[in-house]
Length: 485
Ligand SMILES: [Fe+2]
Ligand SMILES: [Fe+2]
Ligand SMILES: [Fe+2]
Image (cartoon, rainbow, N blue to C red; front, side, top):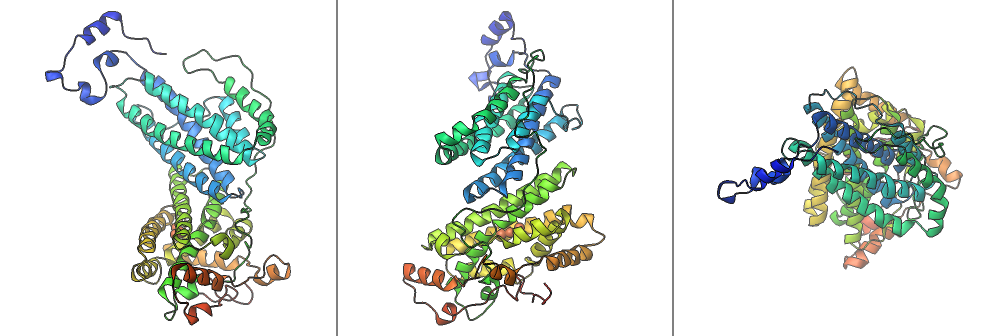
């Protein structure tokens, strides 16, 4: 703790008045606060590095756990919380660099107790234990640390840090509020009882970390439990029971969307489907992030922003279906074949290549502009809004791809060609999955369209009702799939 101001300094400050009683110090605080010496640059940097470490590890955990997490809402929340953590990591790194310190030493672990804490949460054996570790221990600890730092660092001298802390606190509180609700909805008393031993290790790890400014405590590190073996990323996507047919590739949305004789409202429904199906992009991108070590921080920040955008797109599709009264868990078969194929058959770089190939293909006139125009022409203003932002986000993603993927390739042309080759080599077992009984590729489209029509007083169009093109021989970019692939 920094020494407080002397009594005389406080008295002088209390008697000091601004011109016509204008707010003191540009509104930052009072003179009695400002005569307290606060932290040194070195001490403030030390605190920043602890927050930085916590946010970075939280980012890692949210990313590492979202693909195999079955519950859709948690996947979406983990995507969001990973993005928030990444943004604050970025801001804190920049601030450290402003404080006579090159942003070096940021990769150093501030205390082995913290490392053990986050390793244990990362390896939590159940979703319940993961949620409790994240939202009842790690994030509250981070919030308290941010708050303490804000309280003791100088109100005027360290204003740029305090501004970042205030912003981080707001978003950490938002994450905590989500976590509390998630825990009360999902974690039973039994789950909590089962997690007790694991949580005890987390508490002991925290107890081994000395209070800032205190002498290093002698308290020993607990024995590792969940992290006794190194964590292994699980790239096999899992879904909850609202995804009963995850291998279903029975409805080719793109073929419908580019068919001039099909009605606009049907196209809007299939755009909602395409958006909701984007859940598989966070599932896939998480695998790139989790399995690509040692890139500059900007790589993780930008790819996480993109991952979160894809999660938003998925939720736009969900909102879209809700807005037209379509019961998507019952009538729309949202598959995971793309994330499953890429995560289990390609290297991280090959996955990034496929993503870039697909996203740069979305930019020409037939891609995202077309979807937005369909939204506008369909007179469904919600679809128009969603496609407008989906398009803008995808333009940003093409840039992220150029910055972090194309820049690593011999040429822009080869970057595209390589992505195409990598996508072509992913084996989609259309027929095998059917033979194995994993799916019948049921054509779910007529049920969805019929429900939409009956809920909205629309007469079904015969061409739309009769649509039955699957992905068996036409890929999502409308390319014919050769017999070998
Ligand atoms: Fe996308
Ligand atoms: Fe999208
Ligand atoms: Fe994208």
